Amino acid sequence: MNTFQNRRPTGRLAACLLALLLAILPASSLQAQFADAWQVVVPHADAHKRHEAAFIQVGNKYYLLGGRGIQPVDVYDPAARRWSRGAAPPVELHHFQAVTYHGLILVAGALVGPWPYEVPASHVYLYDPVEDRWIVGPEIPVHRRRGAAGAVLHGDTLYLVGGIVNGHTSHWVPWLDALDLRTNTWRELPDAPRPRDHFQAAVVDGKLYAVAGRWSGYTENGFASTVAEVDVYDLATETWTTLPPSGHLPTRRAGNTVAVVGDEILVIGGESDTQVEAHAEVEALNVRTGTWRALPPLLTGRHGTQVIANAQGLFIAGGCAQRGGHPEIVAFEHLALAEAVADAAIGRPVTPGTLVLRSTRPTGDGGVQVTLANEGGNQALVLAHALVTGGGTVEAPYGFPYLLPPGATQELTARPDGDGAASLLVKAWQSGPPVVVPLGE
Image (cartoon, rainbow, N blue to C red; front, side, top):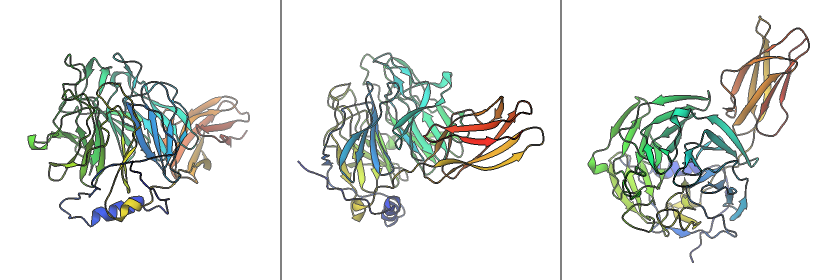
């Protein structure tokens, strides 16, 4: 059995080293070079077998989470080459593409419940890897809820595209929605040219790509209605286009995962009606040329998981080895980037910030404007609630809960009732005491 010998991180250079590798490639095509084959990663302990799940990096660790049933999070430490266990989610969450935001994992566009009549999750869920804690985040508008959707992060905005409303039976949608994570507000954007579900999205150079997927339940053979077209949304102009037929996905499938490396979107694994075994194909779309190339296939084909791309290459774990739901696997694999970048550090640890009081200022009409800040760490805080002791109101710019990135500030206005002593209490979901601001007598 092949093993991948990982070296301990030595700094914070992963992203820089990957950028340097890509910088030496021809400007006309930032096309990374990979090893000739995937290798099995052999940890000292195994993770839970799961599919319709996510595998994602936060800081210097990898997280395998979600999937059918309710299972603990599995945490892989590449430096120690060991798995450990984290907290189980509060509800069953599956069929989602996880994203990270300042040291938190966000789950949006998930399904809940058993096949085939699953229902969409009502909220965005957050996982805090530092405190090993799940948090119920912003509510998804009722009329825009769906699962098996593509989810990507660009700046402070979470984009949710496509998906299916009625489990594995009907009502696949072309919707595109944007959640501003700073203001906790949703916005409906133009529909994609076609619906699709059971796929993953990607963002490259300010454009969102919807690749692969299917229309679940469209035919008696639920694996048959795969989508070949690649739809592209320009985030600046808010317009959709579709690549010409030469840019169609070479191997049609759904349940795939995607990774962005340089100018390429890698479509990995999946399931379809053409074979019982899950797909092992890895195909790369060059977004500059609109052409595809084949990369080394997975050792174990799979669908229903995610891939991690970092300065050491690609890492994948979990999924299902055949179309449908069995057998679930772990099958942890790695495809190395060529050159010395394969030995690069993989990231820095996530460190929590502290909610602190920056300043107070009377508003002149009986209120007090309070400025708070997230200081001392590299992780976003989740502001949970604010209240005035002894009675009163708090004017917040957005509905709770909402996120405060590291180094960011937030203003609230407290208005106590009457002339008695009162204080403003503001609490984050993370551990630690609330910020207490005396409002005077």
